[in-house]
Length: 77
Image (cartoon, helix red, strand yellow):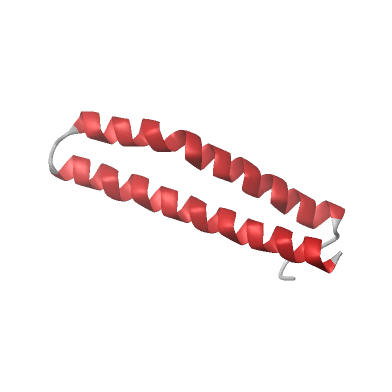
């Protein structure tokens, strides 16, 4: 059971890190597009990265749910 908890914890951390990275890329790319006055670039970046961000958020949310309810992991554990 500890192996499952550790695996879920690692997957959750990977998911959160990927969300932060994708979000950072979106913000930096849109800031760059704003600086060079290319609105089409800003829209393309958001469209291309929206699906991976939503997928990572969904998977991370499910893992968080499993940690909290199935394995009775409390906050900060």
